[in-house]
Image (cartoon, rainbow, N blue to C red):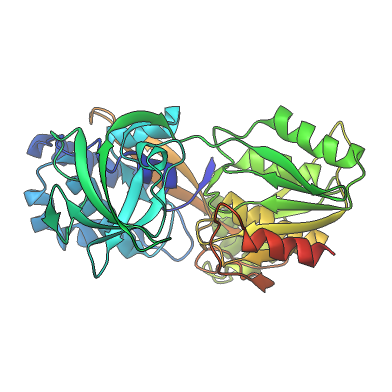
Length: 407
């Protein structure tokens, strides 16, 4: 099982350009949709969600599906229909998306954009990507692509491995010209431990998925304890989630053994609750209170760090990041700093679609309620100290606020 955000940022950034031009046949689309329908209606479960509505949601976009001639357009159309369920953790992945998710390696420009008044606003840059190597930054605007003013879509056609961009830089307002090349790069980001002073360390965890290393994280927390730090700042900004066991592992390093992690309400628990109590199958908080916690922290070989805690969050902090933050706030008094989280917390699985040449679908299997009785799906965590400033080369206002709070 995995906790994942609705949009996994590494997949999004990595495949913006590399998948364009991969045509998709009507036969492939039919096989994908048939396998999707069978998988969703057989496996998916969220209290109060009627997954038998999927054919109706799809029918509303049938014309778009029929006209989709390439894989990215087809996948985007299907995911638009899936969003009609109004929940996270349900989406279609193309074969390229799947490869990137598994390997952490992709090919492309490495940036995401959205329409703006002048053209296209760069909303995210993948570290180590071609865009990052050119020095492009979030907030820069693309005002021309291949000499064409006010572009309305991105990326450019796939036969262009190198693309001419005219950029208005956010930092200076200057107009600059760049040649941006598609390259293979890693979307992985490392876990890091840094010290702001002798009493305070910052543990940055970019993901609870493939890059999370139990041994490395244990070493970091052991160092914090050995150096007798008074406070630990846990940086979970843009951490979209990952494996359940990694979430439990980190919480076990920062909490006493047996600390409740919360309740995952799956189909079996929901049905037993209704059968035994006659209660409402959609009342997540009541079900969680009746069931009790389904997971707790475990005893580790090393003593947990029990000093002061602050957690840095933003709108891309999702799933396992939100669970970790909620548990540490409720059970350890951790201070949440930054922006509100994604509000995307469902337990899910990535399931291959039979006879589709590599497509997968992510389906939710259960909902989650925190130990304190808070359902996090569509209910983002709100920071105790709200900070809107962006990170620059010389300042990090969110971290600065955390250091102030730890005093």
